[in-house]
Image (cartoon, rainbow over all chains, first blue to last red; front, top):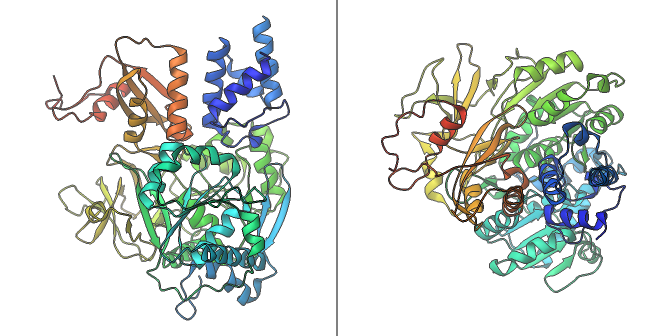
Amino acid sequence: MELQEKLNEIFCQVFDDDDIRILPEMTANDVEGWDSLSHVNLIVAIESRFGIDFSQKELLTFKDVGDLLNCIRGKIAS
Amino acid sequence: MIGIENGQYNIGHICSRQQCELGKGAKTAFRWISPRQEIIDYSFADLDAESSRFAQVLQTLGFAPGEILFTFLPKAPEQFFTFLGALKLQVICGTLFSNFGDEAILDRLGDAKAKGVVTKRSFLKKLGRIRDQLPDLEYLIVIDIEQHLATDILSYPALMREASGDFTAPPTPAHTPSVLHYTSGSTGKPKGVLHAHRSVLQQSRTAAEVLQLGDTDIFWCTADQGWVTGTSYGIIGPWSLGVTQIHYGGGYDAKLWFDLLQNEAVTVWYSAPTALRMLMREDAALYRPYRLGALRHIFSVGEPLNPEVINWARLTLGQDIYDTWFQTETGAIMISNRPGIEIRPGSMGLPLPGMEPAIIADDGEILGNDQQGNLCLKSGWPSMFAGYLNNDTVYRQKFKNGYYYTGDTALRDADGYYWFKGRSDDVINTAGHLISPFEVESALLELEEVAESGVIGAPDELLYEKVVAFVHLHKQYAWSKELEVRIRLHVSNRASSIATPQEIIVVGGIPKNKSGKIMRRVLKARYLGQDVGDISTLEE
């Protein structure tokens, strides 16, 4: 499964909406319910699913879904 | 402050038609700024026309005065049209926070026996999962579908196209039920706090006297309409005075918020301590390019405002922040710091003239200055709630000897300033939202891995209090990151994202008293490293 598809599954689960279709340019304003508290759930779910950990510095650099995808991709590759 | 004309207390009428009759029809009622920053201006004439049209829609669907409609929407212009339209018809309007999960929605719609919900297409799945448990729910009115999906899933645009819009609110006495907000207690299900149209007197007065709103102001209240601040001061207070508002549909974003403050020339800004603390954590350089010359006042509500934030605002923005205090049951600001009186950083401020707070001991003795006790209000203020829906017993328990017990504890200093000290119950105030530990514990127990749970609020620098969950797992299960995710998502999707535990601690057992009640104070004392006090009733 493509990374974006896997991440899409996590978004659907976290935001309780099977219709979400993520795109790299999407931001929190494009997903209902993506607030600072549900963002923590999203990050914890991603870390668990991919077996990775984000640093505080990395978390501050995520401006959109594309940034998130790139960071996950980099961590998996290394 | 508004004048009541011909005994007409109808909030929907006062906030729209009356403003038109006062010559403000062409004035902007609100500038809608979408999450993608598209802008639409709505005049008071638009607000009147759209809300009247929706009142007629409800009438055509068979809604009668006293029946209950809910909105379950993110910020959207339709929120305002439907809210005011329902009130024009004397239908009670409840508002639901858009991040509520299934259980939270079911509790509220079920208790209220709601007849209809105005919502978005993306929320239909969530509502569909609980629909068969809501026999009184007749209509889902969906704002973003062009055609009706079924006889009971209706298109808002289609309904509005079919309505003529010729509707005038009937004469509405002061005591007529109006707005319904649910609030959490430390035990049991959330309670429906029912207000009456008379609340507009206090909301209007405080918008004028505390928030200092006048004819030329541009007002921005960042609260969501799912909570009392969002209706009392994001709708009723300012519009009862004919004041222009901005409503932004997106979430927190420091740069974007400051773009809005500057570019929209906001003159009065009402926000929450958590948001202000988040702004305080940003790089100070972010704020340097901004010129906020139009901004006259900043106010805060939700949880106590720490003095550091006030000092930050003085240094960075050249402004004071005035902390205000009220709660769902009071309907409007009761105690506040405000322009014209000395700010005491960290205090709740002074009572509004006419309000009679008192600090009362548990035995009923009215306490003097500098003594901590229950914060109470002499009953009878105009925006006092009319009751808890279907729960008159608890409503009566809130009043003793003519005083309403707020559930907060406080003290009054020698100069009459009130200082918040905490809650007299276990309710958690996180980011200005009250969370019931019982609701979170119940959601946790739905997970097969969890044998027992206990939930407390613990101090947090950003959120004021964070939700901390103690879980005792069944012996065949072990703690894992996957389980943490399951717990977080389950609570978030059953209760709401704000109820999600910020910290989960696995323990060997939950302290209970001999009758099985969770001893949250013991959990809290242990968490904070404090003396647990009397544990004579602790179960062996």
